[in-house]
Length: 163
Picture 1 (cartoon, rainbow, N blue to C red):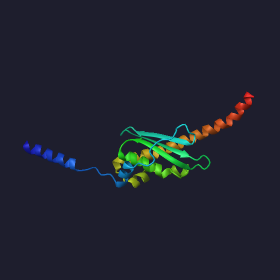
Picture 2 (cartoon, one colour):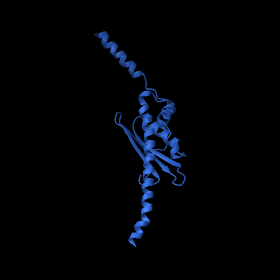
Picture 3 (tube, one colour):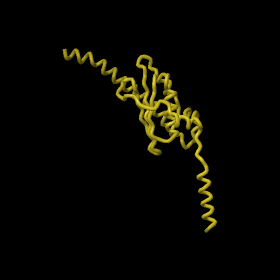
Picture 4 (tube, helix red, strand yellow):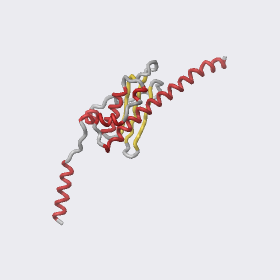
């Protein structure tokens, strides 16, 4: 009995000593996240992607601001509720989308983000969320843009009918 108790205590002490290691890039993006914040979601030049992972509770909001004439993403912001890997994945995603065309950012894959951050297999869902958030933000922007175009085309007809 005493041996079992001593053995359990020794195992417990060993477990407490072993730290959990994250790659230095994850730690850097967690401690110094880039592009934290948000834009006005009602701005027609802003696309918002809101995604979550029910299994772990991570929620990620990624927003892009697009130059309407060139289609270039001129700025990006994020807010993430989750682990260090989710925050780091969001931070990297905002850095990678800036200055790129929307079609180009749609090719960003979670595997590239995971490889860049050296995420372990148990944290791959974080990079998947980042990829999904990028796609959702682009989709939201395109939806707003299409609605804006329909509204602006219908406006002269409405004015003519009222005259």
